[in-house]
Image 1: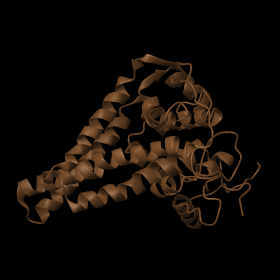
Image 2: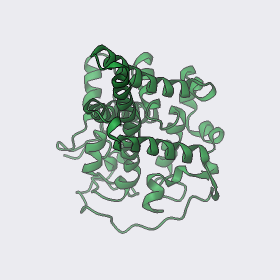
Image 3: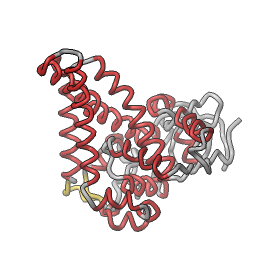
Image 4: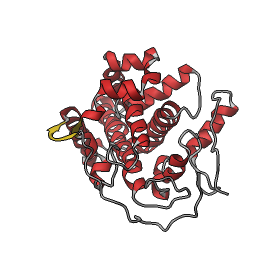
Length: 312
């Protein structure tokens, strides 16, 4: 892999791409469209004073790093998609449950789409290149039917290894996925309700506090994690610098790296996709990899892949 000095921040001359050939612009994926609309609407309840609490705000912020960082960035991405480390199955499945609670589809689906992205990065068959347009790369790609992303076909090609695990098969074939999601709602609301009763707020006050934790700790947090994750697909293929000439338009974007605890060093990731470490320069802070090192030290992670080549 050739190494080059960081390019100037901003979008280098890049071609405009047509939509993937298999996209049908007349067919909306209603399951995704309705889910996105409902969750954004529920997150707007945070604007109501009755749904506000500072505890809820803290849970939303902390949840970005717990559910998004450990569930999506560590488990779905570095562990399952790229096999950058191995954890005991009980721990891996625990992280995967955090990912499920982020409402970014099942692990197998997420893995399959992301592996296809790497195979066709910033070419027409890329499921979500922002070279089509920013909104397409950010979220629009989910809303229109793409025959190349049909579950049976894409799983057979890109996610066979994931589906060998009975836990991930159950997430596809049973009601386990919605059960986990709805259970997470109950945990936040009932936890707040019980806390309110124990602190003497009465039933009404306890319901208000439980609702605030549900709105902020679940709905606001999910929407925040969505947009933060999507920013890797959109912003980190448009703005930033490159350490490596990878033959596509991935960028290292410091803002995305801060929001995602390290995923924003996206050009480094495309240069060495299997590496569990995304920050290659000393100042490219990668908190997720720091957590991986902690797991490794505790004997809870092994076969940790590090960069094959790293910029000095």
